[in-house]
Image (cartoon, rainbow, N blue to C red; front, side, top):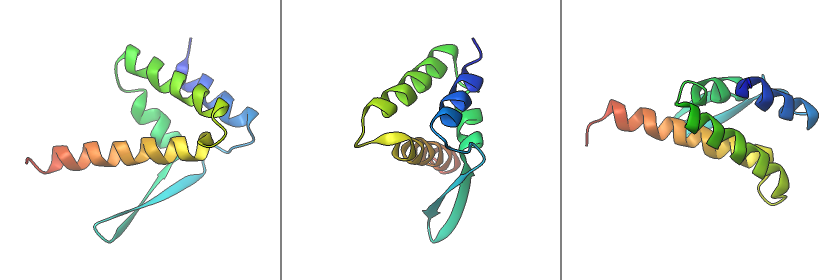
Amino acid sequence: MNIAKECRDILQQEGVNSASSIDFEVNGEVITLTLDYIIDAYMQASDESQLVFYSALKKSLEAKEMGIEKFFEGMGQLLLMTHLSKKFDV
């Protein structure tokens, strides 16, 4: 199973363009991540983590109060926090 393709298929079925982007403000700087980038970043993780991402995406469809947009906002924030924590040793 190609999990990245499955994720993009879900987006397409929901009428969401995977090339669309989300802006995040980090220390006064706007950082833009596309949904494709977020998917690709998580697909670099272990097989188990990929399945967790895929399962969580499917669950976001069922949770009307969360939805796909909130899911990708949260996953994007997590990516940025992980990047910043690696950049700055605390």
